[in-house]
Image (cartoon, rainbow, N blue to C red):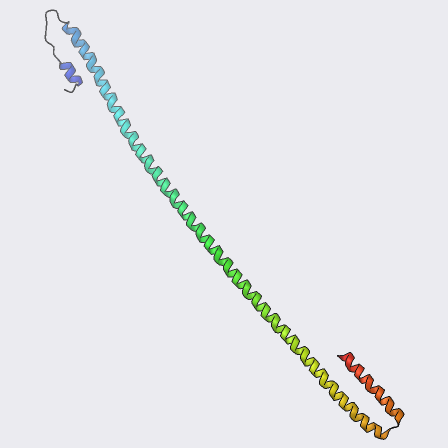
Length: 174
């Protein structure tokens, strides 16, 4: 049986010859009923506060869960961005290395081409000098032949010395 303030007030007891004073019992029951009523109200208030605090706790737990999810998402985004940056950096380094290698190879090819051109020019210079010497010597011999027939031996000797001077001039040019 559930006890309520009303059930306390309406409670009746059997009467006995030597029993309690009915007025005292009724007064005491009134006091108990009032106290019980206050306890019930206080209990209802506490239950209402408890329900309110439970709701706040659920709200805070939801906020905490949301913050944890946001933090996790931010960490994942940060990790993905970091990985993307690393991949981009590796790609840029590889591209730079490839470009540097191409530049070095091109420079080496150009240097080799210049070196080949220099060697070719030196060879052409030697060939030209050899031909020029041959032409000059041929002309000197022709002049010698022509002048020996018209000149004295002394003039012939002077002409030979001129021929030596021509060769030294050629050597100085080279």
